[in-house]
Image (cartoon, rainbow, N blue to C red; front, side):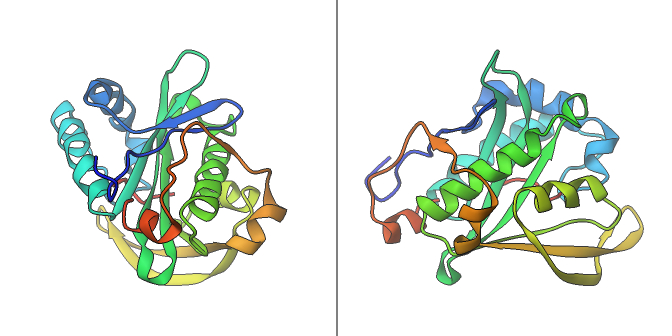
Length: 213
C-alpha cells in the first residue's frame, strides 16, 4: 500500500474483531452463506452459494478498497476467531456518506453481534473517515434487522416502495439513517486496533459486501 491507499484497519468491540477478509476465509464464508435464511434477505448473495462464489467475492475486495469504493470487514469473535458474518460500507465520499450493509450467520443470530458490529463500523466511519451520514436499506419483513439498526442509534426515515426485486418478489424497503452528531448519543465509541494517520480527505479516497440487512 502507498500513502494514498493505507491498509484497511482492524476494529475491535467488546466481543468482536472486525478485520479484512483473507483468502483462507473462503470455506467458512461459503458455509455461512449457503444457508437460505441468509441469502433470502440479501440482494447479492446467490443461492445456492458455493466455495467458488466465496473465493470470487474475496478476490474482489482488495481492489474495491484500493479504489476507495467499499470497505468490507469479516466479523470474527475475539475469543477463538470464529467467522460470524460480514459488514461493510459502500462509500460515497463526495457526499460524506456511506451505505451500510451486513449479515450474520444463522448459528450466531440472537446474540447481539450485528448491533455490536454496526456500532463499531459507525464509529470508524464518523471518527476516522470523517463521514457525516450512514444509511441502510432493510428488505421488507426483516424485523430483526430493523431492530439492529434502531438499537445502534439509526432512525427510520421512510419507506422505499417496491424498491427491489428478489426471487420473483418485488418488496418494499424501509430506509434508516444515522448522522454523525447523533452517534455519540446512540452508543459508546468503539476502539480501533489500527488508525491511519492520513487526513480525513485522504481517508475518504481510500476506503464489497452484501448490502442487506
